[in-house]
Length: 279
Image (tube, rainbow, N blue to C red; front, side, top):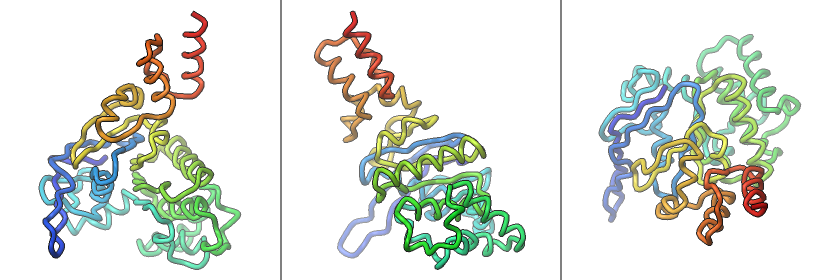
């Protein structure tokens, strides 16, 4: 669905500073229908990569294609952004109307979707994110998690094939984070939408199909959550921590406990420790 080939990106030099290279020959393929989490510390390049996925940024070198369409082709820009929707960190930056349903209708209206179809899309999108009861509410009166779900509904109303969430839970409290993640997993599971989740929260990546770890503008690790989070020392060397369960098992193993490193959920971790103690 999305393919990055040898992608390099350099931010222009600001006054008194040198140009900053944020991506260095990145090669990455996102398969249709997959759920991919992209992790990395601040400055690793993960958000810059996300912005290349629907042509918010264009590569300095290499190519990015969306369903075979080159993001550098201006004639394809509208179609690319119709296919790939972006949800950013601060929902207030994406909410443009004074009423929830009007905000959700904004993007399809600008795409020239017929009025009756817009009404159907708005209703369906609000139901999909659990916000149908708030259709006539003012967005500024909603909680952070509710605002982010409205922002996601606005993207859904465009009928995208891919949703890219760029640190979309970073400003939310734990309840808001759970609301947004539950919404995204439901859309992926029930509608088959391809999801790319950019995050620095390790636990958010546990249920992804695939985890990509970035460091200094390159892909440092790529695999399933179990494969990635079993490599605790490697994650530490990249300035990252593994999920709490993996960190606990790693600590116990370093003290001589005969425990598997691949138990990720709390239940799996508890069972592994109980079996070890039973021995």
